[in-house]
Image (cartoon, rainbow over all chains, first blue to last red):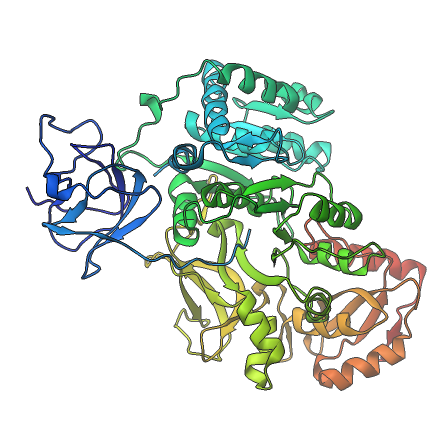
Length: 103
Length: 515
């Protein structure tokens, strides 16, 4: 089910240990999946879902993920075995642009 | 988004890495997470609504910060150097707090009727109870991003111009700052950051959370001396450090061994940096990358920075506009929108000076008892004056409140002070406005002479007139033994007139024009 996301929202995978935070939300409603199954708020996952074996590429903690059109940015807060996807399109790791340490 | 999310990520991603203290025996990410659970349990047990920290910086500080975060109460670091009356007044604002006290500080909490334990006991209790504490977060602090956003830290301003105000920094502000400027686990395991600012300074709070998220070990210098700083950098193979300008001046002026072979990055901020000083530092440490950071407590630390490449480009350039950037604070962070506004609130273009206003997730701009200080577009007025150059580099000319209006001309004291500080005989300088029947305000200066040279006032006057123009040359020069500065180098301008008055009773001004 397509939903409207907002920055700061936390979502967990239904099929693996992946957890993310929405850093930049897409303008319209969309579906965010991990391992092919829709992600849900912590504690609200329906359970019993089976992952899509073709979408088990894994996620890395601390990496930012985005889509080709750069409409969404999520931060992976817990690593897992699934692949993140927005409306069926897999997300890719966004290259880091580190700033010099200032504190 | 809570601060504990950053800690839990660190514990999950690099739990065995030492994050605070010496390489052997320091606190690892996983241990910090366990201690924060135990500390939060202590806070809840006492029914405390705040955790007040009254000690020098040390390993107890990050434990306190994250324990408070986990318990959902603010951490309130107070200045242990304040006088008893000032401390009593601040403690009275937190009657239901739990206190963490440095040596000799328990008495302050007792007087205020606040339950407290020593920093040593705090580390012992959180360490002992950490072993049995549950590893998972409990329900009370689980957060789905929809609930309220509690205050994470209260920092009292140093009150350079008025009574101390409690700046409220919410979890969302601090997490925004970290996610907007730091890459997770980006530090190598060999990196170490040296912290010299006291815990009640925003840079100390920012230091804990940014280095934690980067996976960088932090070391603390409890009380700063140039010798200790240099020795620690060498012995602990420190790779990055942050200093305030007065600290840098003392390091550069010291007779100690100034070699810092491991140091890669040195950031400075917290007060204006005299250009003569940064030029000397760049010549002394050619291998170090310098970072000038501009930020306020209200903006969760840095909003603009001048990086190492900018410093090198400025020094090497023959283009005056590029060279001038050495005295800029660089460009705004990606998560910050910055505007320069005129007196009517209108947005000014490049090259025009006005009020610096900022917007972004890290901008807290909220005060205890006074609410939010952002305008209807979400911008916070820093009350600093400045301008942007053609390429978006920000030049800060000083606090709006310090601006001298002589005749119809606005004069920034910082510009004149910078010139005075370039004079070889001047150790410290302050420029201020004095009510004047003819001009509205006239310009006066107080200077501190280098002990080995002394000052010839007439020569200093000529020098200033040559470097600036006569309308910006102080009408009077006063000689003082020292200027009133906070521990972090901020000038306490409100105390200057009193010092001048007392000096005036005892001695003639260094130079004065008949007027």
